[in-house]
Length: 497
Image (cartoon, rainbow, N blue to C red; front, side, top):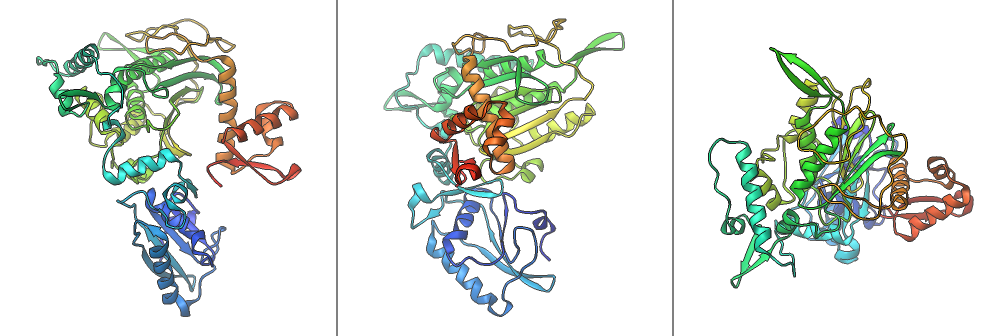
């Protein structure tokens, strides 16, 4: 019998072919994508509609040899498949199982690493970009980006002292014992700093923990009216050290969700509508496990029905959603995870996802949703349907407080300066509007595979000529590709050729 999950349709780890393609390169992209991602099964003899077509039983062993030889000849490094045949509805199908590879990246020999490396995204195999190839190379060498030296970045005593002091403060929060301040030597032992020829060098982790040097290492927060990214009520963008960003983003969420008071044994206890420990866990996970080589930011969006946190980067090291829900974890940023663990912000036991689910259950909330969308990982923590939004104070606060301010009906205007974790200004409204429109288009294409001009007009509520011009700009920026001519023209994601 074939696993029943195959018949749920194609996915990140399952692909169907009605017959073995004449050109091996046609299915070799899928083989390579599986090896570079979470592994998977290529099923020959089942069409896209899940109908059992079957293959020639008399030539099954010849076909198995042909596939084995084709994979050996076409792929670099070597991929060893597990090939078997099964009988379903009296028809023979071929199952080619590929396991997550340890010698990444894998690529087509004929095209080379830069043009022949593929990864799996949803139910498609797509060409990996240069940043993804670089990450795969580091996976293959078992090193992380955050422990690499940031060339040319100056290490100052003030930055070292502040980081050591902050680590000590966090460590003392969870214990009554006296905690000594970490030293420069300990930062070296933790790989936050490196010493070469008696000179201190900054790792990428040190830079992230002490500055706003990396442009996209920030958290964008927004409160929206309704359940879609349409009308802003409030928004903030936090830069600076990544642990301070977590604190500021956490306070942003608390200011925009409801809080009630309960009396227990003559003591007044304030309770938020969402479990605060789950909120904090989601934000910290997004920061610790994100792909910092990706030119995008962690985004936190609050809607009428949910808290949505989106982190750049898919699951790391070949992990699947099923595995993380069962408590398995792999660390993308080893140094950052180590420091956050020292600060008692995370535990390195793979328990975070289950804690989020358990806290939501205790609050009688809908089950949280965990999804891979394109090159991102998203968590949705759903609110109860009868809750109303509370507008927040504009300044970050140390402790959550009540507010009787009414929600703002129109988006807040901002100036052009970026803001830090202490809360100063933001990007221009024009840039934000363009960003939001692009997100609406990309989300639609991810869900439907492509988009037409008419569909885009309905989503963006723009004139036909303006919509066409906007789609053309997205093509020029490398976000979309055109398919078809004139009235039949549709647009697809540029990374899904």
